[in-house]
Length: 117
Image: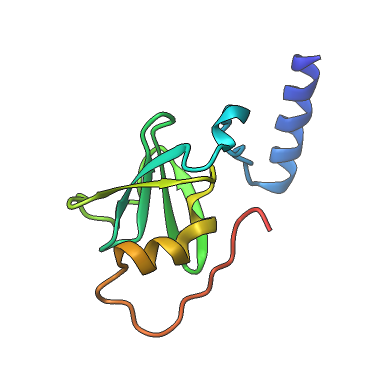
């Protein structure tokens, strides 16, 4: 069964030219309030989730995630620890920016589209 699903996935990616990266898996018990601890970097509005070693960042108005940041991001420093109740930190981004700050160089409103909408 797994082999059949893998073959179907490979065939579909070959036809479309793109590859789907699944959302990271989280334990269902982690949905308790404040169960997700992130390091938030206000200067770049980047989140890092240590247990899964995943970064979350906004790129051209869309939230992305991956095991490494794009090369355009410099070495991050001055992160703060934030506790959220979501496996998708961008869902509470307005709260985080209000309480911990955001980009010092932000100009005007930003779109808040999400990859999973």
